[in-house]
Image (tube, rainbow, N blue to C red):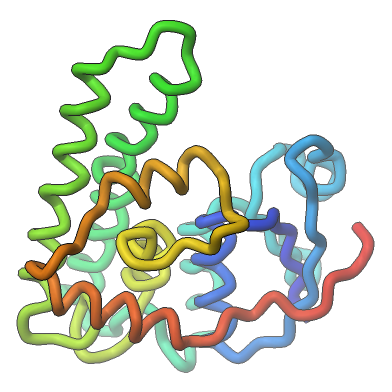
Length: 212
C-alpha cells in the first residue's frame, strides 16, 4: 500500500494520482492543508507535496515519484523501454518543468507582489498562449504527447494544460486562474482539446483519505 501525501487542487499531486492509477497500485492518502504542512514535514523533512511512502522508501517531487513508480512497478509502463524514446521523454519532462512552468510562475509572483510589472505579465501570458500551438502540432499524428500510449509526459502536462478547457468553479487558486485565463483554445486547437478530454477521462488514484 502506497501512502500519498497531497493537497486539494494540487497540480503536482494530480500528476502522481494519474500515474498511480495507471500503475494500478493500492493507495491511501493524507490530505494536508497548506496552512499546516507538519504531516508532510514529519515524514519527508521538507514541506512540499506530493510525497509518497512506499514501504521504507519516502520520495518527494512529482517527477521523481513518477520515475520511482516506473522502477518499482514497471508494468504498465509510463516510460518507453527504447533508450532513444526514453531520452525524448526525459527531455520533455525537463523542458516542461524548467521552461514551460517559468511563465505562469512569473505571473503568479508578480500578482502576489505589491507593484506588479504589467509588461512582464503580458509577455509571459503571450508566451503561455503561444505554446498551445506547440502542443497542437505535437498531437498532429498521435493520441498522446509522446505517441499512441499514455506516458509520464501526459501525467506531467495535463494538470496544467487542462485549465485551457476545465476548471472546477470551486478551484479559486491564483495559479490555476492564471492558467485558465492565459490559455484560450478557441477553435484553433482541436487536437489539444481532444487530448485534454481524453486524459480527463482517465482515473486518478487517491484512495481513502486517512489521518496523517
